[in-house]
Structures are given as structure tokens and as C-alpha cells.
Length: 188
Image (cartoon, rainbow, N blue to C red; front, side, top):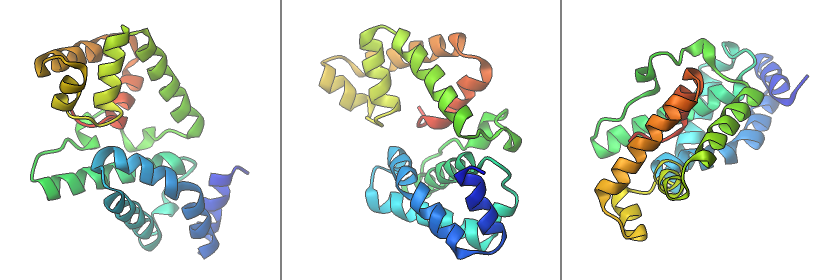
């Protein structure tokens, strides 16, 4: 039995040890993931803690089969989007807007890593400058203006480069992997 299955089993038995193990294994990676969206450590920590509390109090673990990691990342992602939308009064696209990323399509750890590797493999095929811009905006959460100033290019060049990179990736990745890319990156 893998660690995630063991944790789920403990949680389903009502054992708080399961919650402790869940926290120990996933807290730090989830906070780092949340930081991609909210950019503040305290907010990221609050979001992850809230996800854990709701996961325990609402007994959400009962519905989670084998894809604990994917479930937690999706929950943190959605909480981050809700936090941004509430705190910044701007529309953020939620994962449900991606349509085809259904609840039953949660990925387990190996599928998650495989999708990431496919994405990074395609990103490495992009021209070096395009890679630099794409990674800065989508994975380092830098603003277009910030990237433009750092690279001494116009904001429009950054936007055009990102748009072209997304088209290339959409054409080179299978549909499910491209939807996964949309899920893990911030909203453009």
C-alpha cells in the first residue's frame, strides 16, 4: 500500500494520525504551489490549512479514491483562485471553465509527473528566448511588464511570444496534457 492510500485509509477510519501524515507529506509542497498564485507566504499557508481543515471536517477523503495528491492540488488551486477573485475583485477563470477536466480525471502521482515531463519536454523545444519569456510569465508568475523590463523588450512582444508559445504547445501536446497545462499555470 502506497503512502497516499495509507493516509486515506487512516482518515477513513477516523484516525487523526492520518491528518498528521497528510499535513507532513503535503503541506510544504502545497504551500509552494499556492505561492504561484497568491505570491504571499501567509496567504498561501492559510489557504493550504483551510483546504486541510475542510478536507477533514467535511470528510472529503471518503470520496477520494486513489488520487489524493491530485485532489489536494486541485482544491488548493481552486481556493487560490477564489482568494484572488475575492481579494482583488477581478475575474479569475476557475478549473470548471476548462470544461473537459472532469472530476473523475484526477491524476495520480505518476500521471501528474508524466504530464509535467511532457510539458517540459515541449517547452524545451521552444526557441530559447521564448522559453525564457514563457517560463517567467507562466511558472514564475511574473507580470508582462516585469518580464518586458528585465529583457528590454515591449509588453506586446511578451504577449505575442506567450500567445505563440501556447499555440505551439496546444498543437504539440495531446488535448488532455494541454488542459493540464492550463490547469497548472496561472490565468493569462
